[in-house]
Amino acid sequence: MKYFILLVSALSLSACVCTDSRDAPEIIAKASPIDCDHTQSIPTLAVKEQIKGWVLLAYSLDKEGFPVNMEVIDSNPQGYFEEAALSTYSSCQFVKTGHIEANERLMMNLNFDYATLRPYASIYP
Image 1 (spheres, helix red, strand yellow):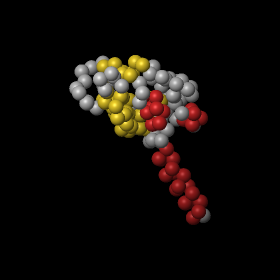
Image 2 (cartoon, helix red, strand yellow):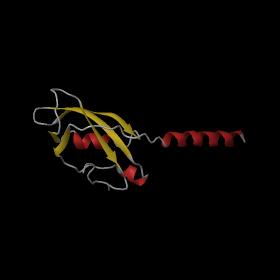
Image 3 (spheres, rainbow, N blue to C red):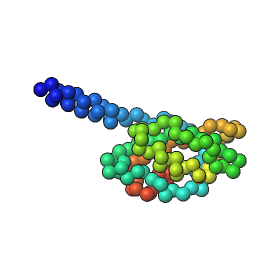
Image 4 (cartoon, helix red, strand yellow):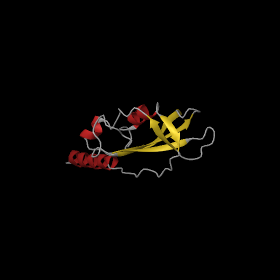
């Protein structure tokens, strides 16, 4: 009986961990990708498990509009979409959509939704 209670407790705790559904932070984009290879998309595992999520990226732009030091700041759920976001956007060229100071850290929020995207489809409209 105590093993049954332990099993139920463990399953309950693991269910709580998996259902973290934080909303993505609101970001005012000062740059948008214009020259980008959109071959990377929502990971196949996320499609299979029907997982939605988002990734918040931070980066700076060089003089030609290419990102420098792009990194993941936050994501939800963690471990699913970070690699896809970085591999797709780290080599894109961006155009300024607002005033950007020299070496300013910009942010971009990417939403991943298995219902609207197929594997190997664009993650940015």
